[in-house]
Length: 244
Ligand SMILES: NC(=O)c1ccc[n+]([C@@H]2O[C@H](COP(=O)([O-])OP(=O)(O)OC[C@H]3O[C@@H](n4cnc5c(N)ncnc54)[C@H](OP(=O)(O)O)[C@@H]3O)[C@@H](O)[C@H]2O)c1
Image (cartoon, rainbow, N blue to C red; front, side, top):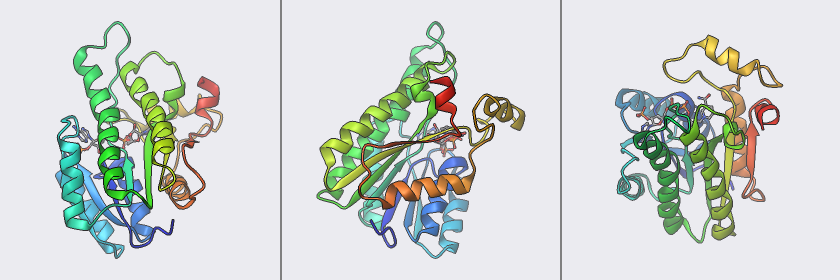
């Protein structure tokens, strides 16, 4: 798909990885709906950075743990910026919890935000974008294929997102392609420092974090290549090979 001039909705786009994804789209000439939940100021800054690139951009607030918020967000974006042809599901929670200490709140947060919201947004997107063209990219994690111990609900939500990717790719073909980008360590989680990230990456074959330009390249590759659907691209310096 020639991306230029289309509109994308990127969830969790105010800052960090979501902002990297939004700016990659902006640099490719895509208009961007910048979704945020709590980070209003950061969302405004992302919008300003996108507008400086010469594309249209606007910020949209939604608490995606609420099921009604996803179709409402999509409708607001559609009304303001036109029907999005690109959906990037990046908003996510990442809170530790093991089998024995994961409570219902932790479980629901991850399943609601990381999996149900992408499902509901994909549904709204597909209803508007079919018969196509359309592209969905779900941001998942190498942990989705790694049975680790510390992030039970997160890992299950990201594994579910891969299954959603496969099933939506099949059902929404040929008009809409649905792929996933499984990231390795990019930034330390909020509350952790650079040393945390370095400890994590030293256990991977590549022994390094993933850079913004590499994320941008991978996202644009997934979006531009119409032959790709149901693909999970591991951009993780080999983390899933060691841990999987
Ligand atoms: N960071 C990494 O190294 C890494 C590694 C592997 C995979 N990933 C994946 O990449 C994506 C982005 O990661 P990140 O580290 O940049 O995330 P993050 O800093 O933890 O940010 C979480 C994002 O989710 C949004 N969010 C939080 N609560 C929400 C709610 N109730 N409703 C809607 N949105 C909500 C936040 O928006 P507000 O700030 O506006 O509330 C924020 O944009 C995630 O899918 C993550 O799993 C990241």
